[in-house]
Image (tube, rainbow, N blue to C red; front, side, top):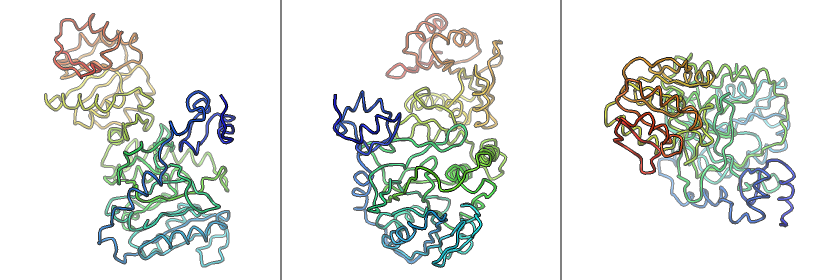
Amino acid sequence: MTIQNEKCQQLISKSYGFCDRLNMNVPASFCQLVCQGRPEEWGRQSIKEARIKKFLKIPLPKSTSDNEITTVIIPAVEEDREYLERTIKSVKDNALGSIEVIVVADGWTGTNGELSYPKRIGLRKAMNLAAEKAKGKYLVKLDGHCAMSPEWDNRLKVACKGKMITVPAIDHLNTDTWTGEGGDMSFVTLDGSLRMQYVHPYEYKGECPLESDIISMTACCWMMEKDYYFELGGCDEELGVWGELGAEWALKAWLTGGRMMLRADVVCSHLFRKTTPFTIDSVVRRNALRKLCRQWILGKDKRRTRTPGWMVEKFAHINKKDICLFGVGGAGYSIRDKDWEFLKSFVQRNNLKNILEFGSGKSTLMFDNLGCNVISYDTLPFYAKTVQALSGKRVQVRHWDNKQIKGRFDLLFIDGPAGGENREQSYKVGSRANARYIACHDAQRKWELKWIEKYLSSRKCIASMDDNVIKVFE
């Protein structure tokens, strides 16, 4: 097989990279074994095709055509100087309303009226200083190397009311044409260390809604009301000069009762540089992540009104994808949307309150968010600690100690340990537990069928999913 496209050959020479014909990041093995030079069979629509052409046809409500000022804050290092003029021109040319632009020259001396700080102060401090001077009702943080799509300001403002952060779709910027290339960097998740991880693609063909709640964001462009910005304390300067901005604001918003939303009718085309033009202190960055964990995951911040587990439940399978969040779930190892809907319906219909669980994870957090009391056992101590940290006060996650289970339970849910042949102990101990119902996950598989027949033969199957993935015995 010969691949005609030179870019295919370049990508194959790497282990992983972005294919502009498929419009997604792919491993080299995909090019060699699957695509084989036939991108039309595997590609997806670009941002322009799937979003702009579709949604720009939707007229804006008249209420957005007022003269409320939008302040665009651009914290810029000296390496952004060559891009600033085009960035500002794109911002103003494509806006409908009144725009105020505040450029913060961070670490250099500006020449066009910028706020200048010859000694570097960092992105977070730059944002806070500029926000104090802003005249606008709305604040937009924008990198100094971006192009905006038509009517971007009013289309973001449509949804940006109250406790809301609105975010555009993110494209790759072509610096020659100063337009987007059709790439998609819109959707991210937060891993077990709270680091941002890209998830590709964001939307499948034809399934892109106008507005989508999102876990976190690519922090090159976002909008919020100025009052809300300061209500949440602005940017936390203790987190360092750069990095983890998406995680900071995602946790601040979601876990204090706010929202973060992507507007599909707005695209920010952003220059993704191969290397950063400044030094990132790895120790400072690691400490920032630890502070975010203490503050929001472990619940030290008194403003927190939701548990991190609430976020895991909300975004467990967004976009029909199995996405890992905070290190929990993902990669096909957790319950599906329809699995949870089946369990949730059964719990609510029978008013079940006390849950015993073998195998902690997303299900633990989901039971928690139903208001259940949960005792969950896991064989991996570190994983048990992670799930406990994400849970509310009704949940106890314990390392399995091979001792008899005491207490009465409304439901036992068996979904661990991994590998059906390893679950015999769960079924053996579970069959002796004082539980009215026993729900078995992966009940259609060979080993689970064997353990069900061996240990639950005295119980009656009273409910089952259509595909038999979950069966409930009484």
